[in-house]
Length: 370
Ligand code: NAD
Image (cartoon, rainbow, N blue to C red):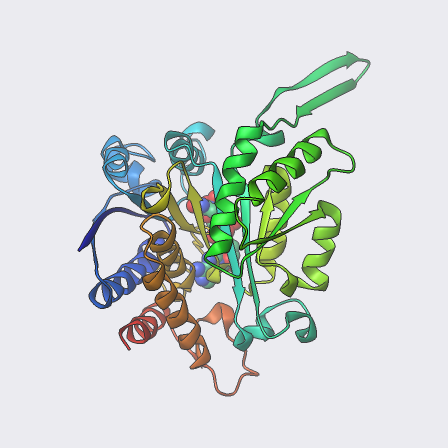
């Protein structure tokens, strides 16, 4: 039997309540499929500061290093101590440190709008084509956010010049492209690579490199789109996309645009992956949303983003595609059966039933067990 070690870091706000449901779902999947998880919890965020004086306590970091993957809730409570220095605040001290420590260079954000939640999507129903299902693969450690020089020069007389530099190497593009093609093989076998090759040197290198990598994935179709067109196509005809492969800046923008199509932040999982291959890819899995302090502790949070993050962990870090797909199908069936947390509920749906965090988790567990 396959055994994997998971560091479960619930964090702040709704983190603990949605994490509890995700672990229940993992336990249900474990019983049905042939794997075993050793799940160990540890504090992070304000919970880390309260327990050990640091947003990412040494013990928590050590646990992550001994683990095969990190399942993360969310960190940050805007109302807590505003005097604490920026670099020690949870969003920076915990998240950036983990990203750096584990060399997480790829961010995967699936956006899936089930047909039953058409009302929650801002697009007209005709544009949704019965359900949107897109995976945005974003390069996370290169490009304009990190390129040097990065500075602001004083030109005098109140005139300044700000400089950011977009830099990519062939190797950086190759590794993220492999990630996207690998992900597409597990989905509908199509990659749309996004660039600005008509204007940027980076775009030309990006397009050439992705095309070359694509030749070793004969079963995956590759197309290229300029980023401005892709932004438009996402709202005009989102169903044309399977995997969207983006560099850092374009991916930051397009992944949020795509996220808006998913109906609710509470439905959106994400995976950040480091080096490795097959069943040995170290990953960090978390909901796309934050700690939602406005609804924390009230049994109102939608646990689906956390549960789908757990499914991504099974797929991308442990190679357990069947178990991941079973959890995703269970989520879909629970929604089709009419279970709705407040964020995805519409009174116009006469067959839907408003439920809490626990009830939604239990409904998904029951579907996994079927
Ligand atoms: P947020 O994502 O926490 O909340 C935005 C809105 O979405 C709120 O109305 C919230 O109730 C709702 N929402 C989010 N997740 C939901 C869920 N699972 N179910 C139902 N509704 C949900 O963003 P915010 O309010 O801007 O930030 C709150 C805190 O979270 C801040 O401290 C912020 O820095 C932090 N944050 C952390 C992460 C992270 O840990 N990766 C990401 C984003 C924000």
